[in-house]
Length: 173
Image 1: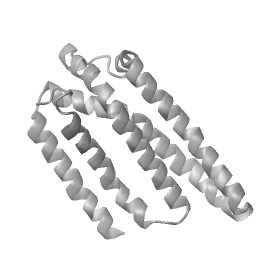
Image 2: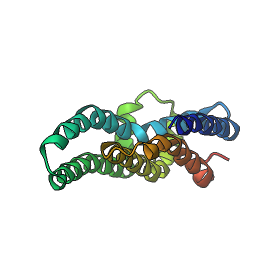
Image 3: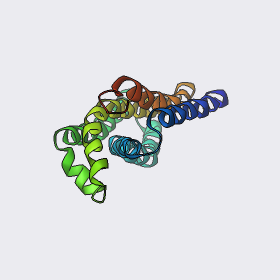
């Protein structure tokens, strides 16, 4: 497990180095960071709530319910947390100006223009990040700890792939 955790740091470093190489300092980098923040905001909030509330509840219920009932609880919890995330991402794509205006009211106009373009491209990677978080929850609840330890590098890899695949459309290069 420690080896998998150690892998996360070089992958994160590579991600930061590629961002620095492709963006440099400036408006485009600021816009990308803000768009990535908007895209991953709900994933971070949902992960925190799930891990601090639902997982302990699942551990308690594991002693009280049979396997089928426990799986029903787990599936209901995943749907309960996945649904708002999907709705948020749809609103982010369809009406990004609402969310950008709310969370980035003081953004300079040049940065805001780039954020508007980048947010649409970040929705699919954001959904992938949410699915990775859900996979991590399910594996942890079922006491399969090795694979969840490998998922933090997946976070950086997903964002890195976004930069590489959508770089031209994001206005990076």
